[in-house]
Length: 230
Length: 230
DNA sequence: GTCTATAACCGGATAGAC
DNA sequence: GTCTATCCGGTTATAGAC
Image (cartoon, rainbow over all chains, first blue to last red; front, side, top):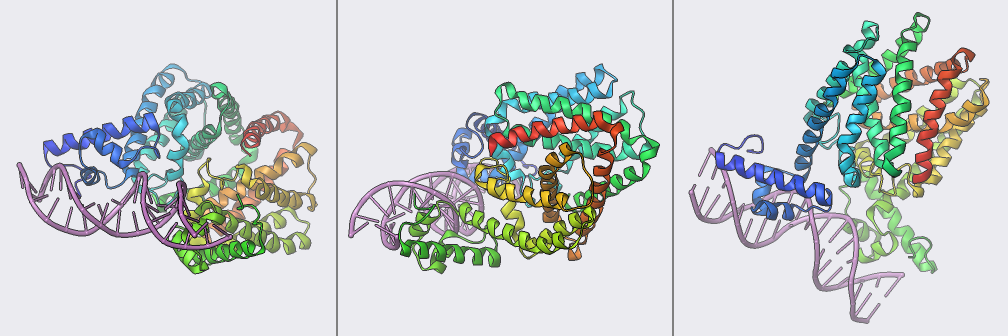
């Protein structure tokens, strides 16, 4: 299964050519409109050869996700370097994601159709995505760690996956959002980042410890499952 | 487009036969494993004829969802008639859903794959699903209205869609859940119903009015979009 | 053993005759 | 309203070239 790492240099170049062709077509025409035959043609290889390097169309899409994620990390870096306010950091990171994915709005629904299938290797909790998920959580860890906000240790441990999930929810909202300039998603990001910061402060209140325990217990439930799947 | 209502009596019978055959096959083999050719064969009609009545395989699945929803209403009725405790009502309704969908766990992922595509008529926010969504919200309205718990008017208005969304989240969790007897989902339902009740009580605290406002504003954002889509 | 190509399979969807 | 014949695209089998 040379999908992992082609042995030859020539093979490696071929694989790269196929991937590049696919990404270009995805961006231009969208995922579903792009056929494997088109990809193969654009890359100058046969259909069968394309399948030799990428066992499915989905795996090509996965490579695309990887690219998007790396662009997000890049776009978020200046925000994280620039401010210690938790709200500013959270807001900045979420807006950075928005700006990175915006060019793909017209075919985002089609990406998410496959990604929503728990059996698909593209699902956020799938083992194949563990890397991206960990990276995503690491990003929110940074958001928290670099901020001036004080947090109970247990929250610091549990919040990153939760924030990452929230950010996925925002992406889901964005997919549906047809408002000009994606204004609604922007509003949602602003409101929710304020809200989250306020909730985090509230959650640190000692009076609410029993409630917090309950929330953390539920989060543990959720992660147990994610761990089993991924 | 006689997909809506066949003109002839014969047509009506044919349509029913196709639907019945499809549901049986979905339950036996799952959605993806069932081909339109199998459905047509089992119904004793040609492939083209099946497509005359159901323009896509997805529309057959939609009919299945409708059936599941009606079974849920039926299963929830005794709970709603039997207790005035908010927690008991919420818990009962969520567990009723679980018992209704359990027989379909083995192919639930495949249902949700299509349902997660915003362009699909199966998406919870799609216009075609407005009926089911309204019914679902109405169910949670009953859960609240028939309980002994006092609620601010604004909460009473905003909670049903939120609870419905939570219940969809639980279904999503259930899809991934491979634990024996679906124990994890049961635990999640118990924990989250307790948590929700506690949060509702907390939300009624006058000290938290500013926070509550913010939450309600965000919910308004979310519903604006749902309204546009559905 | 690594790579590439051709030909076919399979199933969702459609066209058009009756 | 029903059929047959066909398209189309993801995927696979397989044969052969380096």
